[in-house]
Image 1 (cartoon, rainbow, N blue to C red):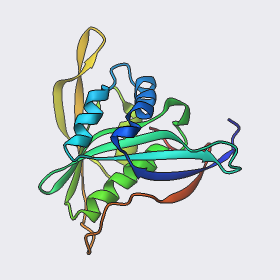
Image 2 (cartoon, one colour; image 1 turned 135 degrees about the vertical axis):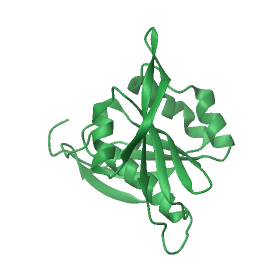
Image 3 (cartoon, rainbow, N blue to C red; image 1 turned 45 degrees about the vertical axis):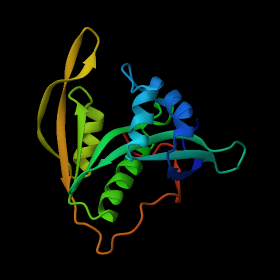
Length: 185
């Protein structure tokens, strides 16, 4: 893609019917991806899944999944279980869009914080979370599978002020982004 190539983004709730396309992204993004069953179980349990779709501004091709997140609603927190941007779409600000959407979802649900785990080796993601105000809360030893070993997770959280009026979660919005924008995940 050329710098300055522009594309439209849209968001919508993830359904079980989307899992095949989500798995195409998941398996390209991670050496140890979530399984199809992890996504289906999460959605069946009532966790929120959100897709980020991209399409060229000229409409030359239909929207495709370039990223997503899955989040669990707790008593007073949103726990971000998975947030992913397809490798070919990274470094364009899309990880930040997804993260901002997750935080907004927590606010709309009246929650007071967002929590997540991130691989200790994923400096780019930790930097993004830090720029968005997340703070390091500790380490979960041996949390993630890794080649021939286990890898620690850094636990991070962000305190949020709930929205003054609790509304339904956003399901379909549209925005425009340009390739080459700052973004890490």
